[in-house]
Image (cartoon, rainbow, N blue to C red; front, side, top):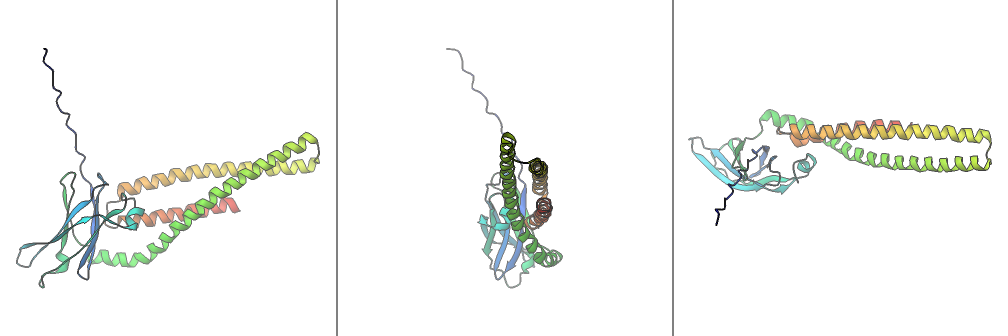
Length: 251
């Protein structure tokens, strides 16, 4: 019998991990933060808490998984949003809590990344911006509601356009309407056609612009404040788009 060649296994290239996240805070004996692997968004990353004592000894303070749900992560496009972590910490009396770090391990690639706590300047900036960003976040929901109104308005204009076309056709066929009425209907018909055509072009441009913003935000969302900044930018764009479309339709 002829020899049967055994095919050699094909090597699969491993995609490098892109780990993002941060330690948000240590409060009342608990540590809070989030971590995910952009290359493997369904992974739940291992988190180990470490610190260095004043005499130079390294301490392991605990472990957990970054698998808790958080709304700002969902809104920021971080996978399914189940990438937050929190855990109890028991610190030695002489240990400065600001020296605690989170060591992140990616299970798919073995990549290890260390997150330190935000600096005092970063915390101050977040406290200053938080109220404004919350108000902008409310604008996101308002923009979504406005987009629904836009769709409903477009459908209403389309129905009115069809009704006018039928009326004009019937009047012309039966010669039941005067020339003035036909001219008025024709003028209204032309105006509506122009408005709905302009609205369709605007919606196409808006959709292209928003897709571009979404792609750019996901590509650049590597800073510690990525979910908050992404929400703020998205809200600002949404509010601007809603205002322009509202002016276009109702004026």
